[in-house]
Amino acid sequence: MRWKVAGFFAALSLAFLVAQRWPASQALTGPGIIRVTDREIRHLQLDNGQRGLTAGDVEITRSLLFNKRITPKAIGHGELVCTHVTRSLRVCTGTYVLPKGKLVVGGTVLYRQLFQLAVLGGTGLYDNVSGTLTATLLGERPQRESVLVFRLTV
Image 1: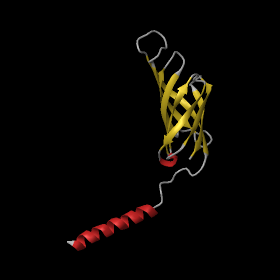
Image 2: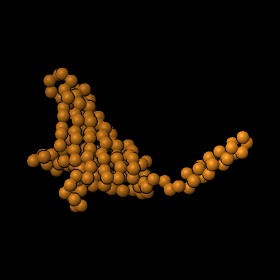
Image 3: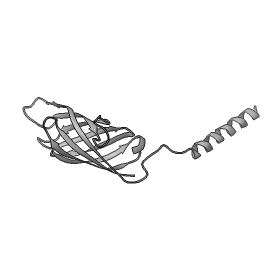
Image 4: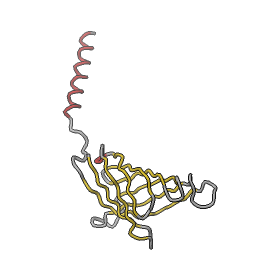
């Protein structure tokens, strides 16, 4: 019985040592900038019942992400959910899914044409990142498009 217990703890210790030496998941090792184009594919406004934009109204935006220098096909997608605090001020959270991981953002938006949000974290390559997202509207015709610039730090 003692040999079984000793063998179990030896195997457990070996597994622990291997796990400590095993290379961590590939993650961003330094500052980085990601530039993508965002094309809105759906924009929903949920009204709380009062006429016009008022506190409590919710906007849900879904978009496709492109890197047109590499491919004309979408490389990811994003969702941004904003709750109005006043007629123009919104509190937003969102997730952007890219080929090597996800980025989560949040903050306040006053103007949809130009806004900045904090990068709260990420997964995959973007595990443990922070930074900012700056969105700049390019145009609304034929579809609403923006340039998104993620400035990431580790």
